[in-house]
Amino acid sequence: MQLSDVDIKKGIELGDIIINDFDESRLQPASYDVLLGYEFMIFNNHKFESIDPKKSIHEFMEKVTLTDKDEYFVIHPGQFVLGVTYDYFGCNEKYACQIMGKSSLARYGLIVHTTAGFIDPGNKLNATLEFVNTNTVPIRLYPEMKIAQIAFYELKTPAQNSYGSTALGSKYYDSRGVQASDMHKNFESKE
Image (tube, rainbow, N blue to C red; front, side):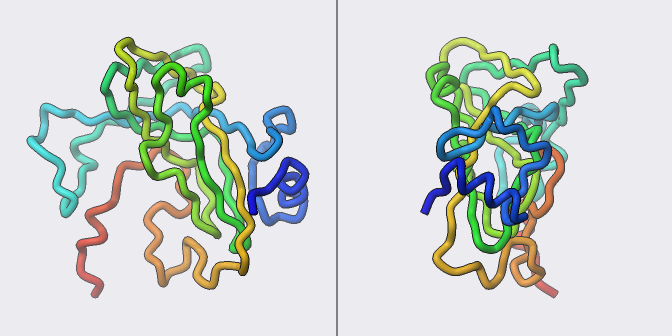
């Protein structure tokens, strides 16, 4: 069951839902607007011929950090960029969360998360966003602009192994900044 504005506020009061610096003016009927952070990561395409999921890509990515709210990051047509939410949020083992794009930005041709918008029960983080500009013109992204919305779902039963438990090997638990893929860790031997 998706939570309403009333349920989200109650979840925050009970500590089941975490939204640091909760701002009631960003609460929607069944979601909460999150802001864009100051960090981005881009691929240095000239340094490699292809992505190999068995190998780390960290050395092929460059972090860009803006320092002022009035600065902007330009995402060019067809470009893929990682960004991060300004907001730190999450939920306990009773809930899951979904990041969704905002329709106003979708109408510019901006995809906010290519596919990975699900936040597992027990996770809390500044979420990494996966931007793609599908338009034919560049789009400016400003820190602390409304960039996405999050919706919360109550689980039928609380998760037995919430994200972040050692049994799961949760790679992105409690992430505080933009984070490149750690897919290569899935191929490492478990010794």
